[in-house]
Amino acid sequence: MKRFVLLPLLITFGVGAFGESAHAQQPPDRSGPPALDAPRPLTLPSVVKHTLSNGLPVWIVEQHEVPVASVALVITRGASSDPAGKFGLASLTAAMLDEGAGTRDALALADAIDFLGASISTGAGFDASTISLYTPVARMDEALALMADVALRPTFAAEELERLRTERLTSLLQVRDSPPALGATAFPRLVYGESHRYGTAIGGTTPTVTALTVDDLRAFHAAHYRPEHAHLIVVGDVSSAEVIAGLEQQFGGWSPNGVAAPAPTLDTLAPPARPTRTVYFIDKPGAAQSVIRIGWAGVARSTPDYYALQVLNTILGGSFTSRLNTNLRETHGYAYGAGSAFDMRLAPGPFFATANVQTDKTAESLTEFFKELQAIGEPISADELAKAKNYVALGFPQDFETTRDIASKLAEQVIYDLPDSWYDSYMARIQAVTAAEVAQAAARHITPDQFIVVVVGDLETIEAPVRALNLGEVRIVPLDEILK
Image (cartoon, rainbow, N blue to C red; front, top):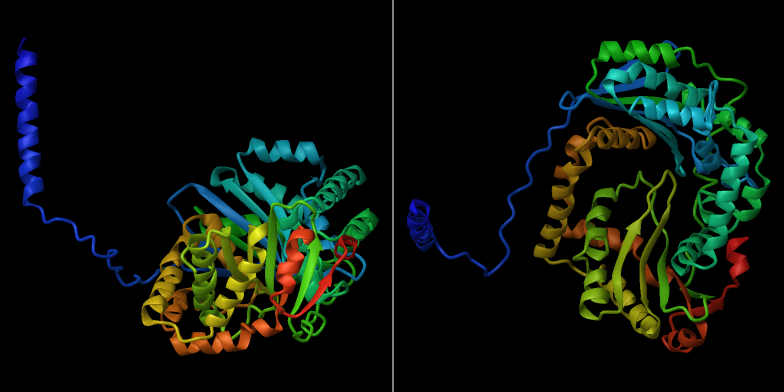
């Protein structure tokens, strides 16, 4: 009975106490969003630099919060080094590295990695190839030995090549049935052309992937996976002295074989001259949406407009509250999302604005796209500028949250030869961007009259309304021309 007597007393006391506290508080101010604090300085961990006996540079960051480590071997050669007629070679070479290495076949290698609680991943971009290890530090020595096998002693087994080749050819075949994939494939082809390396996806085409051989992979590996093209990056719960000893044991004896292939020159990767505005249609009968990509070649990673373009693109299409997304999604409901991006590489990669829009709103969507592309060159308000700069600056620290994140950012520093102060000064440099600098960058790089327009969709429905816009010359591109 006492429980039934005391409970109401406790409830009454609690309500009274909280009620008095709530009554004493000021009502929340809902007249506007909370004010943002100024971005706090980002203090990054120090990088200790060493060199192995064979000249291989090693960067080490000690992070002792969690007993794990991330190790990245960065090879500063990627898909841009693919020979003519063999596009996809760098990508397939990287994919084959962990399909058997040293004395282990693919299954035995995977079992050995899993047994350590580690993971090894490989891949290639246009500017670099990477082998990444994530491991408990207690198994570091064993994991490094497996990583060295993958990087230096891949077997390139013929049966594994055929398996990966089949997977890739299947993926390439599936592009025909996916309008978004067609848009992503067609746009660089129409910007750069068939012979330019940026005109073809990293993974290559059906003819090139079909023709690649084990000997091609071995030759690419020998010519490009070399200590003079490489950096080792280690981030985690390690001591520099101990990890250097392990790296020396596994990688110090790495010596190049044969003759190194030259790096691609910026001249060979230079984009074509800007065109007059042209609309390209790719027909997908019955498509419920039209895939739109608008743009041209953009800028290299080394552009002096880098910081201004980060802010500009955030305003235009690089965030959920960007002008493009607000217009096409929120205001008009033509698309689930819309955005834009500068794909910066060693040479100028593409700039594009894009959305998948309702088929019956294709022409209207193009009108809104060009309205925003034109307007980004006009003066930007102080509030919009401050919002964009805060978005970029305040989001920057999350790029350094984990050992993998830090290793990835250091790899970027290696690939693009960024100064040691780059990340320390990044937030301040973003905050220093002015409206005038954004306007000047827009004038140089956002030139809608010299952009191409790629539309993948139901030609019977969309052709006439789009032609009526008089955006420029209209061409209908056969599917096989894009995918050859």
